[in-house]
Image (tube, rainbow, N blue to C red):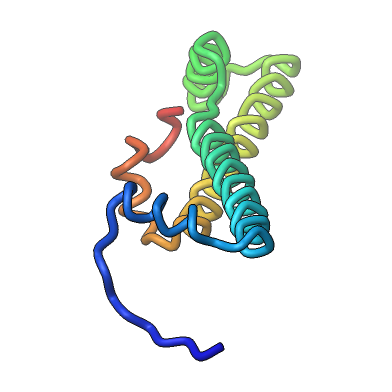
Length: 131
């Protein structure tokens, strides 16, 4: 069977009319390919949603407040030993969250094949610890 390529504008109705004319084996193949495409698209949508959620991760409000208080005390060099440990743990947690956010942003950029800046604008990303 020879194949030629043409650019044609089709309506849903004309596509359905063409599908109705397919022999049973080609109709089965079409259904199989459509199912694969739907699963792929559904998976991509779920993955994008998960990545967008990851870009919004942050410390809880309570943790942010506590980290800021400890930061001030650290700058004043008035941290107790237990506060120093708490400060380091919270700072480490904030840093890990930041890394995960940036990694999710980069992954989203690769997945969508769009520049990071464009993704940032689309998802409402703010820099720093905005969460």
